[in-house]
Image (cartoon, rainbow, N blue to C red; front, top):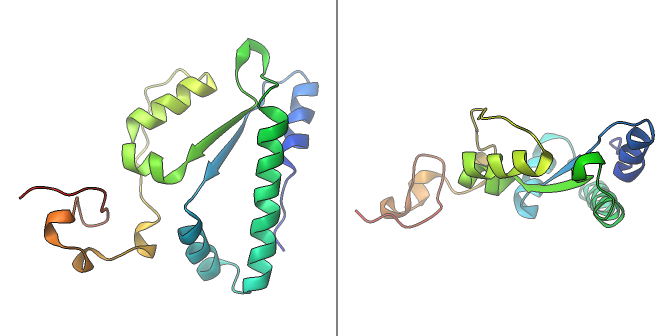
Length: 142
């Protein structure tokens, strides 16, 4: 299987060294994650279930263990982000994450929705529901 880091132990080790360390846990839509990982690196369904279960358990443990133990300067030890929300909201969500992480920056990278290949193709979506060639988020009046 894939190598998975114990998030809690990893963050706590750095903090014991006197460093500010924050785990940024990025969560994805379960169905898209399944389509992506089964296509790219895990074609064994049972193995995928075990890896997913183990990964989710590591994330849950980190959230439970680290949420109440912030770094120096009250910077959180764990922050949860949503991949889909980042792609939907862009810069405002990114700036929210920056603030939560104590980062002072106005940098906005080019965001590319890696989920687009796993969801309906634009031709399958009625024209009045399209936002662009890759996204379908809300109804647009024509």
